[in-house]
Every structure is written in structure tokens, then in C-alpha cells.
Image (tube, rainbow, N blue to C red; front, side):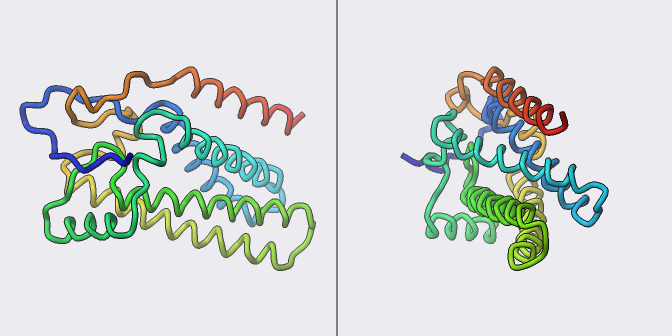
Length: 214
């Protein structure tokens, strides 16, 4: 069942509650690094191996995020933040009229951006893999470049949305994705940060890079 919009925390609310678990945060920032790293090395032949490694890593991260969206903590679950077009429309309308509806986890617009970015990441990495296997140009390479550029635009729109949401909701959404904490009531908090899962994911990535380079 989806989490409904809730009133913004009152001024009497003390402290900040844990909303984003460690796997969500680690995956988020690792995907940022991999995408921009791969984008910046795309045209450098001498950095081809690094470009490919970053692309494979992005694919692993996307696969994990899809997996964690099914079995993860409260606000990581797709079923708790993916909403239909009407809900997204109502949320956007609430922004336009200056009365934004507050969501503890992802708001409907943010959820749409996340799904779109995950879908584009799948398209980018899949087309990149085909291009790498073919070893030459062709439709896969053209699709790969187009998908990467489209994804870059979507990332830009997402960043603007995050900054706008931070301003309208009076909360630092970027800081929340670093610390995992947002203003809220104790009942809104998740129980554990799940650092062990994040450590296992990090270990898998390290093992992958070690195998790749040796």
C-alpha cells in the first residue's frame, strides 16, 4: 500500500528521523559517479577500459536498486513510492499553487524521475554492452550516445526538481540523501540503516573491479 501524503512536521518536532537507508544512499551516489565518469570518458580512446568498467558498475548498481526496491526498507520499496499519473499531477499542482503536499519518502515527481533514470540507465548500459561486443559503430552506438545524452538532460531536470523541492518544502533534500535523515516524527523513522547490506554491495563492487583489472 502506498504511503499517503502527510502534514509537514510541526515546529515542535524534535530532531531528524532516519528515512534513507545506507544501501539507497550508497547506490544513489555511486550511480552519480559512474554515470558522469562514463560520460566524461566516452570520447577518450585511452580511457576506453575505464569507460567500460564504469558502465558495467552502473549496470550492477541498477540491478541492485531494482532488487532493493522489492525487499528493502520502508522508503526504498517501489510499492511505497511509485504512484500513478493522477497523483503526480496533483502533487505538481500543489507545487504550482504554493501549497506542496509533504511526503516523508520520495514525492510523486521524484518517484517518476527515479523510475525514468533507472529505465534510461538500463538502456544506456545495454546499448553500451552491445556496442562494446560489436567493436564498431552502428545502431547500438548511436542509441548508446542518444540515450546517454537524454539521461544527462533528465539528470539536470531531476537536480532542478530537487533544488526546487528543497526550497518549497524548507528541507535539504541533497543533505538528506547524504545523512539519510529528514525532519519528521519518530513514527516516520525506519528502524535500521542497513549498513551491512551497503558493505556487502561495496565489497561486490570492489571484487568486480579487482577481477576486471587483474
